[in-house]
Amino acid sequence: MSSYPKASTAVQQALDACTSDPKKGVSGLVFASINKKGEIIQTNASGKRGVNTNKAMDVDTIFCIFSCTKLLTTIVCLQLVEQGKLSLDDHKSLYKLCPELEKVQVLQDDLTLRPKQHDITLRMLLTHTAGFGYEFFNEKLRDYARPAGYDVFHGDAWEILQMPLVNEPGTKWEYGINIDWAGLAAERAGGKKLNELMQDGICKPLGLTNTTMFPSTEMKAQLAAMHQKYPDGKLVERDHLLRRSLFSTTPEEQDRIFNSGGAGCFSKPTEYIPALLNDGTSPSTGYPILSSKTVDEMFKNQIPQFPNFGHDGLPGAKPDMTNPIPDMYPQDGNPPQGWGLSFFMTIEPGVTGRGRNTGWWAGISNLFYWVDREKGVAGMIASQIMPFGDMSVLGTWFGCEKAIYDNI
Image (cartoon, rainbow, N blue to C red; front, side, top):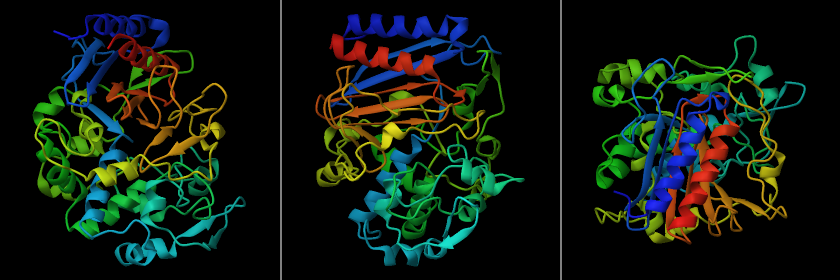
């Protein structure tokens, strides 16, 4: 039973209003929120796991969390920084681990390449200022790769290694494959595949048994279906973007798949991000996954020189993958925006009730999380719908988040 019955009712009403309206084109949603003590404030599910099943969506449903993986990869990288195996700002040590980064070139508007003029650091990779992009958000990168095209979800490191920069390092914020590169650096510094580093450094110490790049048979039985929404609102089931990860069951098969630090994990909302609210220490197990000093650095605005980066939005270079996003987080008065180590930061309080310097980010199938250290609240809404930027899910997320702050 919820300790906050008014919050439970308000959240459930918001979810049901979305999943029960065929015009909104959302088959099912899960929402979960936690407090600083690691206690679940609220967890709710609504609808079905897919348009072609009668299985109800429930709080044990497994989702591919896509770019929400970036937070986990960043924690692994920062653990290695604390161990002295990685450096945030020494480009030479990064180049020793990833010599490919020293040679990567910049893609120009005429689709020719030129040598980069500035060096790349791990901090740049974690703040999306290293110069890399995504083919579904950057028309120039999309066009450069055709007629074959790039597909970062293919499960092959070759795609990542081949993609050029789209900006000169350090000159612009642009969302892209930066944290996939950070994951490669972590693998080479840590001597293990990224998924193993996540299991050893995060999941096992925190008791997270349903967070991995290679779901177990039990997890697959709880998996939500992947969907495509057409412009007319019609929702259909589609092939999974990470099907190679789902089909691979043996260690030999899994060893051949790129452990994508940018988008490779499966999880469920109730397992996500409790430790960051408590300064890096698990409130349930007492295990420190990071020092409080490191967590403070994560929530420090790393890009004050780009205070309006989110207002520039994200273009929909591949309409089947993403809608155009004119403003990533609109706020009255357009206050300065920030980026921490792996996530967007709303520096000023939000209309939902969130406090200052709240970290948040998303996954391409319309998952959204937030971590509010000031008020000790975090949460996630999860769906499996393409393209990204679905207004029905976004609106429901805001409604659920507000319901939490209004009723706790």
